[in-house]
Image 1 (cartoon, rainbow, N blue to C red):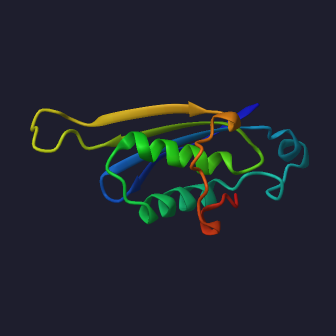
Image 2 (cartoon, rainbow, N blue to C red):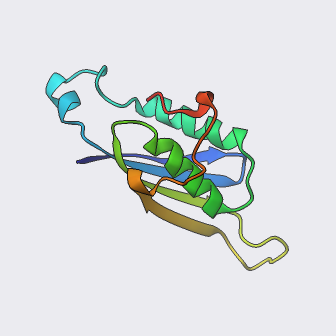
Image 3 (cartoon, helix red, strand yellow):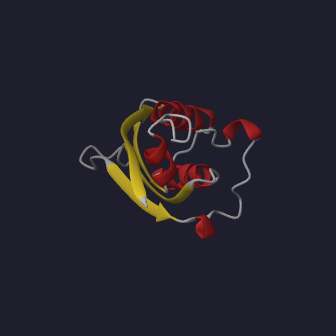
Length: 122
């Protein structure tokens, strides 16, 4: 299994997101062409659009939603999502909060039914 990472995506002004996908890229590597591979540019666009469509306050909630969305793609066998967000409101010394989760398809949330526009098309 190979790992494809997109890091430092900014969304809603205050979240910075890293997504690492565990995928079987053997067919893409053999073909040496873009068709069978995941499109990293499209991944970036879709992650940012997903976050913009769903305002949440907790980094944990956002990380789980992004993991669920990523796992809806049939080629994704594992996903690691890191969300960095602002610290505790009103606490000047709280700094940033970082949440990292790793999920596999069998760990998708029971409420992972998103509108068709949010399905992975990478």
